[in-house]
Amino acid sequence: MKIVDLGLQDYETTWQAMQQFNDQRTVVTSDELWIVEHHPVYTLGLNGKTEHLLNIGDIPVVKCDRGGQVTYHGPGQVVIYTLLDVQRLQLNARSLVTILEQAMITSLAQLGIEAVSRPEAPGVYVKGQKIGSIGLRIKKQGSYHGLSLNNAMDLRPFDYINPCGYSGLKVTQLSDLGVNVSSKQLANSVIHAITATL
Picture (cartoon, rainbow, N blue to C red):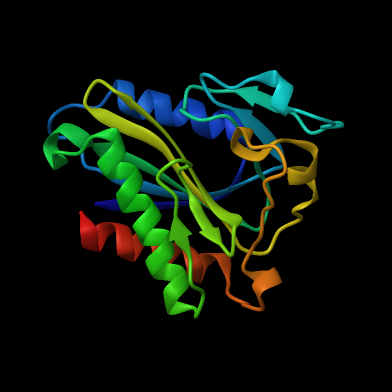
């Protein structure tokens, strides 16, 4: 498993790089996890409905090829992209979602935060507020896109959308829960949990 830390990156450039990586994947290509933060952007999944974009101002919207509805990415949010050979790992979309949810729940528990997943609404929640999101694409034998976990960011842009397509869904982050952790430390914890399961 190769871990790649990309730092702060433009969303579209990173998405295109993921697509290219997956298209060029062969049976001997190593699995990779990419750690990244993005400049402010809304992303709309394959079946995403524009009615969930309420008052987005000048933040760009990118229609992409992951599952799910609309979400927001910005600095201070940990994003981990999972470029995995799902055939080799004997995973399907549901099992990979479960692994990613559990990795976030485990990492949050280590920081003293009790989080849960919801079968009807993928992601991770603390006291009913969403702290972690998942959106995946599985094409040929590979997966890409991945998870985002809110650490210490400006959450206001979430107010201008129906996050993940749910009207009135509240969003939270580690800093609002009294936890001060670097994004690097948080990303490493989540990656450790993912690789331990895989």
